[in-house]
Image (cartoon, rainbow, N blue to C red; front, side, top):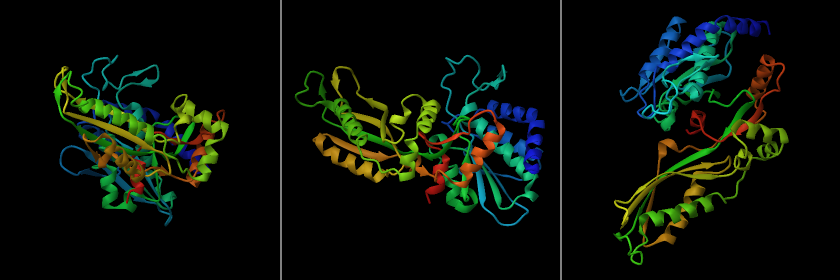
Amino acid sequence: MLQKRSLLRALAADEHNQTSFLQKFVQASSPNPPGETSRATAVIGEYLSSKNIPYELVDVNGDGKVNVISDFQGGKGPGPRVVLNGHVDVFPVGDGSGWSRDPWSGDIVDGRLHGRGVVDMKSGTASLIIAYAFLYERRHLLSGSVALCAVADEETGGKWGTKYLIEQDKHRWGGDLMLCAEPGGLETIRFAEKGSLRLTCTVKTKGALGPYLHLSKGAIRTASAFIDEVIKSVESLPVDLPDEMERHLEKPEVKRAIDQAMGPGTITIIARPTVNAGTIKGGLKVNMIPEICIFELDIRMPVGMREDTVLELIDTIIPQYEPASITIKKQAAASNPFNYSVIDHPIVRHLKDNAKSLRPGADAPIPIPSMGGSDSQKQWLL
């Protein structure tokens, strides 16, 4: 307990440096696409170097998708290996129009830091890096080991970030448990994530002049009908949740926490499969029946549901639209299985207790599943 209080006092005394680090981190643009992270990882490297912490830069293809990795062994012998994982890349900003300020400004106004990626997830990644630095300084007090992965490529699937690192050395960069500070709010702890299945679908039909629909319905109308059928069929699939998770989701306080964290109505689909038609392209001219239509589906699968179940169902739907040709291609880098940790895992209890001690007037955070995915999913891929 004395060591914990000493650590908290040291963190509080260093608040200005931590804010400055986050501000510089946000100001170092790292939109994905294109995914280049060298400016942002240089800021991380500068921070770690200031703490005399060794690290490595991993740029798999030499294209600027840079990962920062570091690890250390505690001085009190063997124990669990904890991996702190956060991503450096962020969503793009478009042409910059519609922003009230420069998205890379890092402006601090009324106690808030502004910029693309502050929430998802540079503040979370910065907090993990800061925690790692303070633990490194006190490594002689720790058993087990700690690893840091500040990674690229998360927003486009993680092939050259976390997934690559774990493929190289699963124990070193996957550890016994992984903590990821993706945005989740102060009131929740995420113990599970939906799986993702991204599909590129191509519909081909005969083309014709616009009025001649008796000859062909065209690729876009066929695609629209096919999408509608896939949505209805996939979202009606039965779900096989773990018993403890099913019981947990029935608790009124858990339902409230889910809707408060992710919006009213989330509880109705948190344990259900969903299908989003994210993009659709087709046609050459308004008065022509199109021969080709290409669209993308983002399918989210709850805990207990596997992609094979979904793909086999879609395969049964395709023949209904003959003579049209419908082909499906999985976007492997962006498709990952669900991720699930037992709700009463010791780390969940530690997180709840520590959060409660830091906010004694507030309720302890409630464990809930997440709608989206994070690089934590990659820990279970191999």
